[in-house]
Image (cartoon, rainbow, N blue to C red; front, top):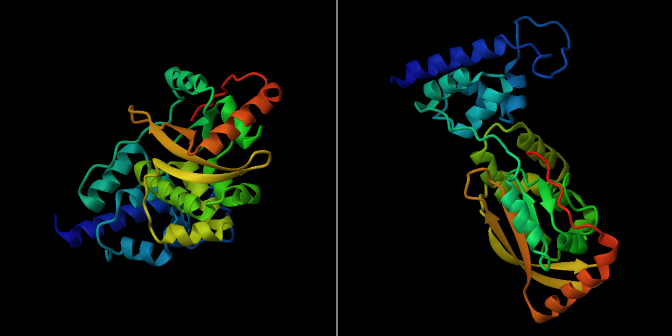
Length: 286
């Protein structure tokens, strides 16, 4: 395809799509009268989390081939149908878009594995790093508030208490940023993931800086130090065990890295056994 013709077609398509969408439909305030219908270029850029200059050049056919993730961000901003999303990818980069994965509830087998790890802290997360379930040992280690409804990236980057207990905070936080960037590319256009990234970029200066360096990581194994309020400093090894079904469910298991931590973890579990009560898991849908 002639690049000039391709750029012209892409620009015309983007203009048509934004001109048919009202600010109210896009979740934006409708301030003042508009000379032209639909969304302004800067509003599309804002919704897709791209620069206004880049988006203008895109409509004008003056950029290279956009990536799949940014095209999906534009598709989400413009409320494109599946057919329109596919057309956008074809005219912008000459390829069909990546298959979308639908977040699903974790299978019962993963929950059974988690519940069976009685002596090791373990928890289940999705690709957004939302905690879907945790076992009793994880509650003993991290406290009763750790569980479904908690996002580990938000906890790591925004909670001062967690920052104080993570003795290797900067390394763990940077790994978390790299994981989110990888997951953003694997699940482009997921609105809850995009909202999380926007929140972290706004509220965490460190996240904003590290996000801009485009580091991509697959944090699956390592060691970190945790300061427990009762047991003192612990050194644990973490292993992320990812489900093979493509749903991006991950079980994170923490194991003692030295004899002192083994003894301390046993003491934590014994001390908290009565106050924790039932060790039932509480999964939530993705």
